[in-house]
Length: 245
Length: 245
DNA sequence: TGTAATTCATGATTTGTATCAGTTTCCTGA
DNA sequence: TCAGGAAACTGATACAAATCATGAATTACA
Image (tube, rainbow over all chains, first blue to last red; front, top):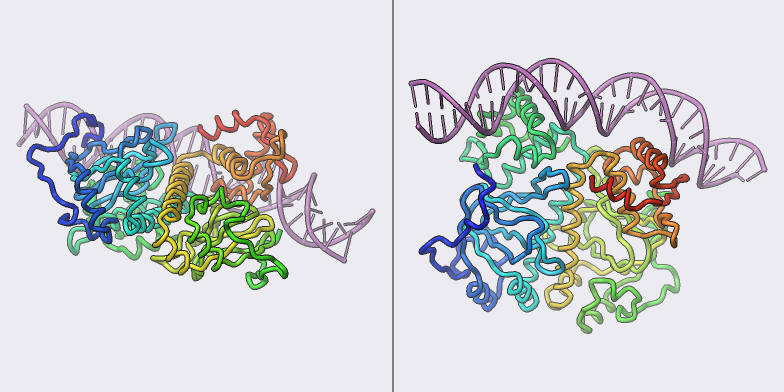
């Protein structure tokens, strides 16, 4: 998977048809679910529907924040990079989520990076329109507030975990995060999300070697099954016990 | 300093007079700064002004979230506790800040704990009133949105630092956080905030021994001066260089 | 002011984790 | 089907950090 495709290659696909937000299949699981009709109209009029291929960059930390994206379909990793170039995955996004929302006013820069893990469809809304909407449509703003609140809680939990967990605990936790974010294939509990060991390491806040080691250990305990990137969480409870130390 | 005073000892001081939010000295540096007059009236009518003594608990993680506090005066530490009982300080609050704001709707529990470091004056607003206000006063809600956004950014940064920094870097960072939160005494750069080594360790995400060691090292390099809890940041730039690795 | 109780500093030890190197496995494309 | 390259695994080593133990310093309190 090539994560370094040029953003310039991003463009609306030919014949990619318009859809009104009111008819969008993910409206009900998004911040738009209680949105005023006028507000939906305004978004529908201003948005641009865009495709991203797997591995393509959607947001770049530090770049000018042109606006936000409503995700219609796809799996996306949201991460930050430290001064030494090390990445930490903060969270994942999927259909119904919004990304780039944290950079539309006080600062004109994105504070996180985002890369499509799978092919993705998203609707882009420019920052100015977004800001205007949050000033004029209380129901929309209120839903946004709830969304932020949720993100803040999750991020606070992540801070705590990064600060206090051991590496094996963090890896177990990372697997559970992958499970919670995108689920598993049917009853087998084989994760729908396949990441490289390096990506899992960035999610857990450790190194790829330690991830290999931790996964081997979990395998030998019979808690998970793993062949390459395909991981089956056999014993969810045991995994939770480890992750909650 | 006794951090375990019973919450039961909390009560409004006798003769602690009412003040309308419009006249509050910290209104302009709070989320109320652009608030509609009606909204201010509603808050003024519903709020209760309360004193906390140094060391007294204000919020307890997991407890029923009765409402939020507007801080009028004082220094407060906001932290979370993991399953092993280890605390991590997430941030500090002071005049103009709000605390307990993250738990007023989807969940009825506080997700963080808060303890007054110094004597504190705060205004309590019950969760129901708070929620109603965010539904009916767009300017208030919009300011709240900005506040959440800011907190989320800061917390994301903290996650990154916890995941990637070495212990000496985290301690240097912790000292800078203490400086940014509450400043220093005049030109001497002696921190206004005095914390135990254990508290600094909880802020940095390490142990009190490592904090002692890191502080000794910084002292011998001439970057800081420290006698007990009084720490003077002699060379801020050098400290920043370490903290930004 | 003196004594007890904390807190702090410091060195020794042990544990945990990152780094490095070598090998194997897996995956992809010819 | 095979070859080449990338990713994953594994063990060795070195480094970093937590833990433990002790004495010094500071603070609280009588």
